[in-house]
Amino acid sequence: MAGRPGRADQRGAARRRRRHAAGHPGRWPVNTYRRGWTLRRRVLALLAVVGVLLVGLAVAEAVVAAKNRAYTDALLTRTGPLRVQGQEMLNALLDQETGIRGYAVSGNRADLAPYEQGVQQERDVAATIADLSRDYPAIAGALRTAQQQADDWRRTVAEPVITTTASSGTAAGQALITAQARQQFDEIRASVGDLQTAILTEREKGARDIERTGNMLVMLLIVAAVVVVLAGTLMLLSLERMVIRPLTGLAQQVREVAAGDYQHHIAGSGPPEFLRLADDVDVMRQKIAKDLAEVRAARENIEWVNSQLQKQAEELTRSNRDLEQFAYVASHDLQEPLRKVASFCQLLQRRYAGQLDERADQYIAFAVDGAQRMQRLINDLLAFSRIGRLTTGFVDVDLNKVMGDVASQTEPGRQYADAELTWGELPVIRGEEPLLTNLLVNLVSNSVKFRRPDVAPKVRVSARLVGDEWEITCQDNGIGIEAEFADKIFVIFQRLHAKDAYPGTGIGLAIVKKIVEYHGGRVWVDTDQAEGTAIRFTLPARPEDVEAAKAAAEADAAAAAGDTDAPANAESPAATDDAAPDPVGETADGAVRPTPVGRQPDGTQDEDPPGGPPGHGTTGGTKERVG
Image (cartoon, rainbow, N blue to C red; front, top):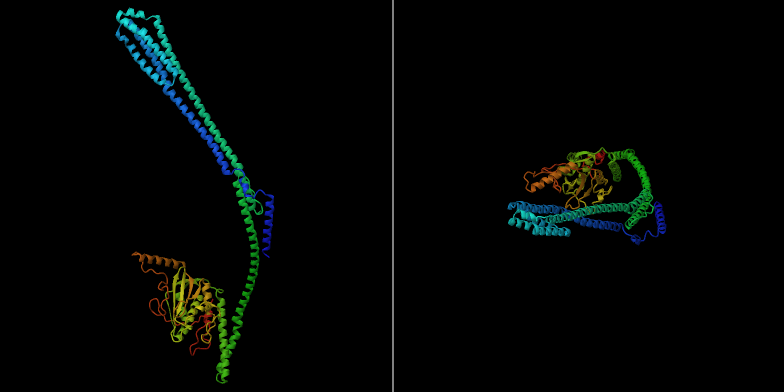
């Protein structure tokens, strides 16, 4: 019944999904995603367009910058020096005229030095101007015109004046310097002026080219900046439209689902990737809704089971109260009439033994034995029920001291069976000392009880550390236990022998198992023993013992590796016992601790020694130890 609401929810959810799918016929087909460009394709296309524009602008800027650099170089290295050279050429021509006039006046040959220097300077300057004006035809043409006029002036004016003055005197030479000669030189000046004008024109043109290419560079940079700004703006708008809005809508729908509306269909928008993401999220929502319906059904089942468990717990509590009441009745109300029956049966046995016939004595003996066995059984049941219920708390218990108490309690039985009890170095553990004493008393008594008739019993208790647990072994040389019965002996009231052969109630090893499990360990029979019986049980080791064992192991490893500084004989607690128990009957130091054992595994003692008082074999002493 608890699962029906969950299945109904699932059917309802399936119907809603079918209705929703019918209302959105275009959402589920896979090919729907492939309509239009994907987000990656759109972004790559935008980046490609912007990249092409920026690369084109960069190429144009490089070309314009190269031209600007060329114009600047021409202005600085060609048109600028040309203007200077034009002025130098004019100075050289003026020096030539001055030299000719001076020589015509003085007739002194030394006055021709400015003329000769001017001619040489004119030739050098003309060569420099010709070299710098290779790319300027107008300047080259003006230079040729000026040189041609200068050559004509020297041929028609300067040279005749020099020759006439040298041969006819200064008056004849001055006569050759006429107005026509002065006009001819003025024409040379005009030609040089035209040369300088052509140079200035080219210089101004270069400056205009530099200004124009500079403006173009600035314009291209502005265009690039505009392209970047427009691309960034377009990218932001695209992200807002194609990414942020779809993601925001998807997140809002996811929040609605997370708020508890698990039937809300998640619809995507935007690029195909987001549509796929929305459908994947919706598939996840459907799976979560399905799982949630199953969880709800399971929770209803669990709640129903918990209610049943609560009822069972209440019933168990009531049953435990009844059991406690029964234990109280057994320990008080039943004990009194039982003791009365046993006492009067014993009185009959002592007073009328031998006075009645043999059958009457046998009947009385049966009654006495039955009353005593009933008393032992009640005491053992009380001891078993009190384990873990009447607790004094865990403390550090030295098992060596416990073994001393065990030896004292089992001494009568050991003396009767001529048994020998030895034990090795035992650890300190956390537990309840009375329970641990009862545990070891039962094991030792069990070993003495199930002895071979012709062999003196020998019992050995030893311990070794295995991981974080102490493994304690009680080994004897008795009759042993078949492997098929290794688990049955720990069952309460389970007996492998008739009570006439080995007396007892069959509860002793059940007490052992309960005490061991109460202390967090486990108990078993080692079936690999060639002779006798070895019952092993584990108890949790204290952390300091585990650390000491690890340190000892490391020291032994270091000693084996040749480290002379490491202690070669470091041992953990109870290290005097080997992994296997020591030979029965030997102590750790080679001496024998004769401690006869008498307490039985079922809480009873061996048969009373001859002459013992009646009722001496009960578990009264053990009962008082438990709890």
